[in-house]
Length: 331
Image (cartoon, rainbow, N blue to C red; front, top):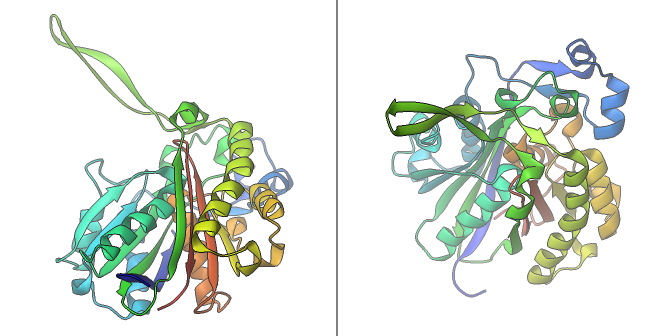
């Protein structure tokens, strides 16, 4: 190994206590538990109440990750919050920094939708490898219920709220981040959007500005599915090539929890058996940037993922953005 390596030393996750299952959702829109579960694999989702915030659940996830890593908040050098649903458009990472008491840490938000956690992980790695920071907290969190059209059964069945976090630390003995690949294609942006819509407001003739709000999530589900099953295996293979690992050497596949059919299709194309695929979407739905770290944390805490295990992860979604990282869990 040349230079400074990276260790993955802690994980944590959190979700709002309130649960909306498919049966109850069928009283809101015309659907059924069978229809949703068959097409998505989702059976329930956690939803934040009006008094709950992204900051609250992100802090809970972050504190659990710090406890597992056995480091204090004041030892954290950098906090990256991957989110598309901040409590404040100017950023929520600094609020998390203050709540944790990580007063020496630089904190900023990163937006890459459902790819956000993977993009955040790779971004954190660059700061560590250059020797700038030693202890980095990467959080993926979203409250998609804020921007879901609950009258649109094509989308409202999919999304839930949650947060997950990992601690990445400098390691002079070995490097656990083995390879990655990131991609973007803005020409397909209209497949999945949470768009701002301006209304003209005349201040004084002839000065007119646009003021408005963000609209509900809009998605072309078929296009997103086709994009994911085509591009995700490809980007994972590129990351594995950079990691000098074969598909057979992967212990666990931890994908963005968007749709069980996508997970099955990606695993099938890669030749990865289903018992190596981590899936918890039945209990959480699609939590965007939170889905990978929540699934990772649950697998670590249950003892499924052990120190030294090789993990291939991939996020994909709005932008369109997608990316993959291959790493070994632990110090």
